[in-house]
Image (cartoon, rainbow, N blue to C red; front, side, top):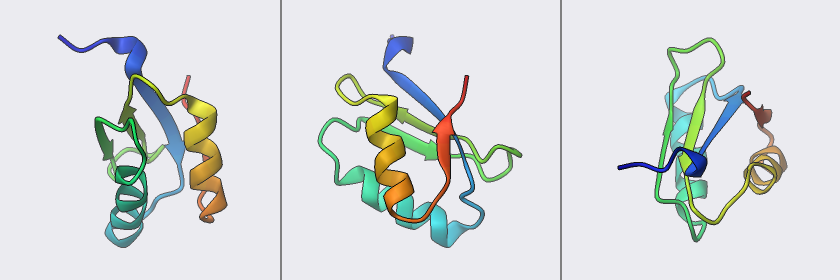
Length: 74
């Protein structure tokens, strides 16, 4: 059973498969990322990260440093 406290949701500007691939590759290199996905069909381009150790701010900082917009989806 998944612990919903460990699911981090973000609104992004990831707009194509190439961006999705780049962001996912970057996040897979982080210790603590258990699962991740980007929904390119959703208007908010939702990034979903499952991690018991990372927080929203850590992910936002990393994504923003690589030129993408990312904010916590509430």
